[in-house]
Image 1 (spheres, helix red, strand yellow):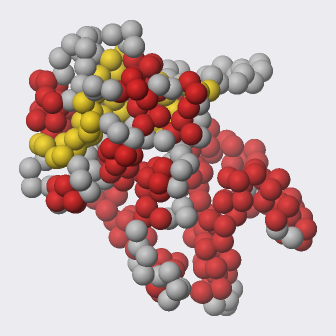
Image 2: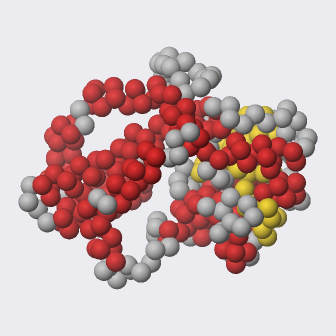
Image 3: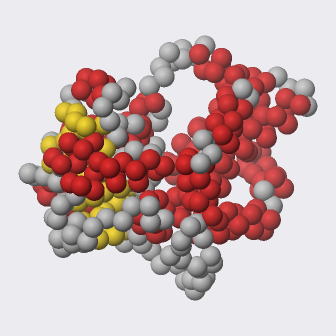
Length: 356
């Protein structure tokens, strides 16, 4: 797996603030007359397509023939075409299918129709960063990357807010790629919250790092360990679920609202004291950071990307599927499902309302 970056970046002597954009800096009207093809209708795909449609943009969804999402997209009032038809139709082609299938779909159904002056867009830089997709020189290549799941991108837009986004331009063939990217982000609601300028390289590496060490890998394993310790000590599984899993969102909501200081203001002084004395015992700072640096090194040198590509191409996802099955059978998932089902809102399984 080739890499464009050294394993360890030189430490910066000082912290510099990134360039930020907001609604006042973005011209949604720049999308007037532009046809936007959204490739995929999953978590991000449905959010981008619906938000752009509600912002008055000309949108269609590109799906493979026979896709289970075809009827759902049409029911939402969206035009649907095959991927090849959408790529031929669109002035902007946004790739919102899974990372592991993008390269093949691009080669077969998008590249033949990516003529000069068009724009190829991504919400994550994986396939550009690791050179699985190499666009032609005559097209704009930009990134509009919401920093949140697609269902949150949709729910916050509907509620008049938005999810912060990253913007990056890999190729500026027309000279207008930044204007186009910022207009697109305004269309999905991201400029309401703020847009940070970055690069495909940095977005890919920081996104993978955050997911693996904190947001997904770190949080899930931390919750699982806490649940298991309490249950093994003889406490009720339901109690363990409430204390170590259910409250996670409530705590994070406070941090999102006003930082860690707001969370500490809301919790008891006893809980805050425990944060200071026990947090470092569970996650020793230097040891934890050393392990995080090892994960980052695997991301930077392409080791993780190579493993993920191989998992999909030659291993039939055996490791991935076995881990997913194991997690589904874990008591924390089974207990949580039962508790959520009996809450008065337990019938609401619409992920677009998860942030409400």
